[in-house]
Length: 125
Picture 1 (spheres, rainbow, N blue to C red):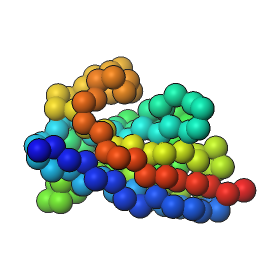
Picture 2: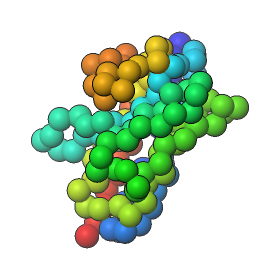
Picture 3: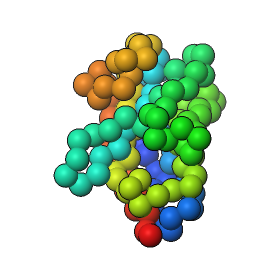
């Protein structure tokens, strides 16, 4: 059974940092990503890591602030978030796809079948 279990969310002041974790079990994936969804908004792409190559991709607004990484031994993906802003407040979701998605489709939530339960990140001003 495939499971994605997220952890690491919380409340932080603007300018602070958080690290999210997503532990995957049940199968291996070609693509693992983070998305986020703020109240009243659509789910938004944050970052992707291609599991085998380790190549990483980011939404423009996260470049330089967020870092996605993986630990092969733990089958876990991380999202290190620095210089957090109030507009980063959202529920953050881990998503996994079996194939290696293209640079276009990796940014589209409809290409992911497996999702975590979400973890709340709140950034206060």
